[in-house]
Image (cartoon, rainbow, N blue to C red; front, side):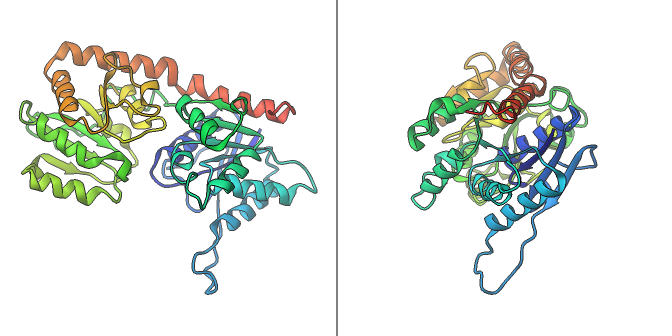
Length: 378
């Protein structure tokens, strides 16, 4: 099968999952063509049957904002024609599903080009709900022959807010490669992150407001009063300065590391003793899954799709957003009880491998492709 994949190539869950899906599909014998404005960040080196097609953008004075969605449509159409794509799988509804639909209309006189759209989160819960985008979001996803959502929560949100028939949406969760995300991975750089042998509390995100990174600092301030620990931030984004300022205000700057963006997150997360995710909302919680697979108990909020990933009291603890005292208490309990930490680490790893491994999830995407190409798309 020849599959086109379009995603945001920058750091974030949708791009990470889309890239890993393409890699896994290529390993399973398919030919995969990524179409985007830059090479996906997790597509680090040459792989057989994986190709990248860059969207060409013209900086023309007439356009204050270059029309990327139109350039992407042209690139999808061009790739589909030249490479003989069987279908296009777009990740994130806006503008990717719209661009794919335009490309499908362009090639329609010659043949059909089925579209699969995977909904990842803020394309539905935030961006898509904005009055400027709501109607085009619904139009675009309804023109897709296949629709998937990464969690039951996101499916329910889509059905409610966009009046999409529930039977149109397949829930296919995010996934990990257990050989990449695993406990005890070396090098994890523990001696550099915690030179005094402290416990490592880690937060990984794109530092958007929904991630509540100031709460991360607040929780850590309570943890460090009872446990020698270091806080490691991985990632970057608009809320990073707030986290830096709050750490300085609380006198914690020497105990907090801001590592910025890293492609090899799997090496860092293997060092974490606790993964802290106090998000206001998460449609899935890929970082939580990666932490569980790597043996890190998770302390997070009980919102969105997180309860579908983290089992409270089994692989971590779940609390309401803003409950910094409770989160700190849960983290301290995990960090000071070796038996509890081991039990949660082992349970998280087991859940990640049994329910969310690439070997069990990727065939579900293949089944969606097969159904659509056989003419049985819903």
